[in-house]
Length: 325
Image 1 (cartoon, rainbow, N blue to C red):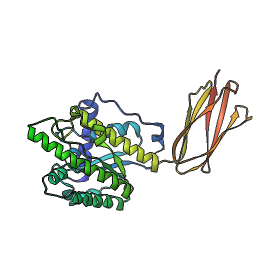
Image 2 (image 1 turned 120 degrees about the vertical axis):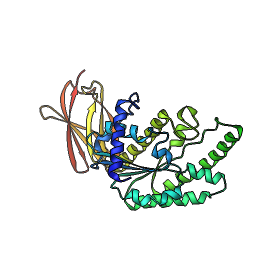
Image 3 (image 1 turned 30 degrees about the vertical axis):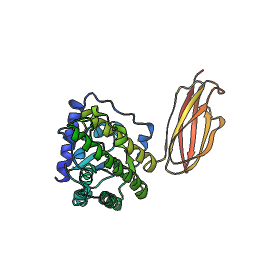
Image 4 (image 1 turned 90 degrees about the vertical axis):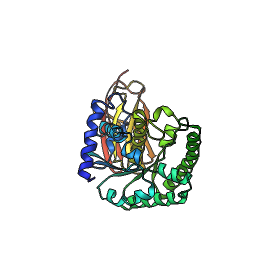
């Protein structure tokens, strides 16, 4: 499937997000830091096997994920490329990873390993092969300067099927634990991020449509985990410098100031009255990179209109503060 077709399918899928399949879903909280995303677009490669492809159709995590991201980043062009092929192992994924990475992207999401777990349980593959395959996949994405987010693999359902099938599911899940532990170690080793799908879904059978694939609600849960991980990556590595409007505003006894830093720095905030009188420095300290909030007391100031002047990383910003008692 070429990239143009993939874009069309994902965008067409978004129509169903808003008009039917996911019409009742609740959007996750965006957070004030989303307005400081420094890249021009949100182009995301999703790579893996059947859970990435979307099984059973027409369900998928890409549809709600796109809706969540569009809600929080409405001014950014957004594309989600679906490179999921059902039934594949990490070794088979290696054969097509280069083609997937030929698409221009901002993030690389990979979820793969359930089919490896089946083969490892049946003594047809070694765990070390899965680890090495995933290390190579991550390395290829990193070579394209893509931030990598690794999804932990969901469990097989142990409560369904014959006694023999339940025993088999438990054996596979022991391998799933080994794979996910290895993925967490790979994330540390390669400087990647984990989207812990496994821990979030757990063994809640109400989130499954069959023995391993999520149902509609399960895919919504998976998409929330991806959404969280993408936002964490943005907050840590792709934030521009800026400030948000303090709140509450009007303030009575306190207000909260918010700002974001691209690197550790000193932040100085001076308050002036509407007539230009310097009321003093209300905040002066060092903070690390990312979005920060600080609570400032306003009870000692007379009611009126004030201007807050922010100085951080060689830049200056101003915000209006209204105090009412």
